[in-house]
Image 1 (cartoon, rainbow, N blue to C red):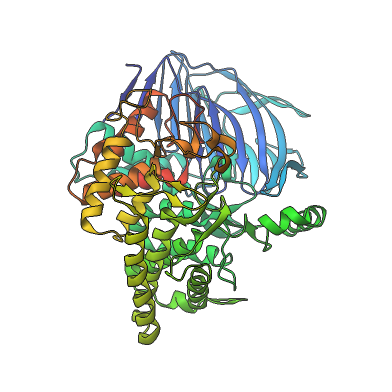
Image 2 (image 1 turned 30 degrees about the horizontal axis):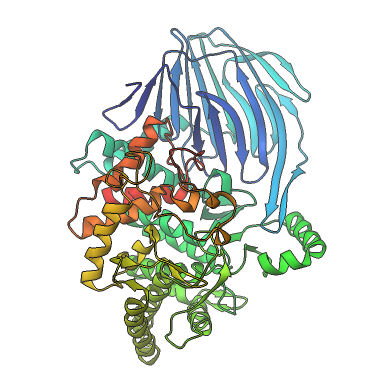
Length: 593
């Protein structure tokens, strides 16, 4: 085997190295290719530097740990590291006399919104050299910490020729000037390991916890002084935070630092509108970006009307967002006892007002008087490449849970009349849901009942079980069906042996309901393994006393075999994987805490 799991959960690869690895902190993300730094992306400036090159070539082994890696080529050793709460990266070389270091300054924001294609916005910067420092901006510098500059060539490409210090060491800081970064990284790794020190974990489980818990912490970004959760590397600019992604990413964080959730809730609150609608995510934009979007909105009025109803919306009107907001708010209050958050005020009302507006919106979308909302023919939930309409099990589970949690919040603040009214609606919804969405012949819940009946098994229906909405006999039958049909080790009808947990089986019937990546069987929402959903499924199996290790660990084991160390967004055996260091894939860490 070409990799080894070390005692502390870190990973060593021999000769066959991961093609990409991501190191991330509060303000920036570094992409490494073939164990070498390649580019740096900043929350503030977009891609700042790219095509990084050193005259060092790892060829023996490389070790990876959260926010760090080291590689060697016999005599020379390179180490790259950061810390989730830091604002810079440290690159160290040992046993080297001279080093050539070059890169291309970029400083461009690859800006896009759902209603127009991506464009690049250049950011003005400078190149000032003083002593051992090349300054591009006050908060972005290249600092030679150890060693000295022999030669520097500036232009479209910047090249350093560096001479090592008396110990044959060179140290480079990229980002803000920061002290003791190596110590912070070591302490951080020690902290992660302490979270499971009394747990009896296998080597595979230890490494899975280490990297998934880190993914949650490294998703916390500083957006102009506001801390919020990014979804992942490919979902970072414009700066934004999502309702559903952050709901699952925050689950392991809630277990060790529940107070952080207040930052996330208040950030999301700006996207909960007076009509009760919520976007997929909320953007944090500067005046320059707002002016740019306004000009695009004028040019594309029809698309803007559909995708961009409010100024900070990232893809307006998503049907799962409001429910997630209420459930997260209730979780935060239960964990902290902080009811004062309900009084936090925004231009369109308090947080408490926003709860009421979300509940009213759900009821307004009910067209057949069973209190269950009917989803329009759109792709506005987590399955954003599928047009599901009518009664959708996944969306209804979130609605029903939101009503239950809202009733508990109203109880806590002493508003008994509204609490009782909301609880009564919750009970009726729960009853009607079990009656309407259950497929007795199949032994599980229908995916959706709309233009047609989609009666395949969709893993996202697991939310109905997670939220304790379903009857007990339906719960066990559904889990048995998922074990039999979605766990690929048991499903002999799918073509690729044992590779994880499929999101659906069989595939969607109607091609007109699919677009983009989900058109293809086994791909994206049409059958890929989504680690966050596999982990939710594992959590429910664990809670019900069933064997849960396969959905919990198979995706991680498969990832290590493919050299994907940062938790992956989704994957299948025949198509390209999703992005690395995906926030909600950290959901797996919850099961180890």
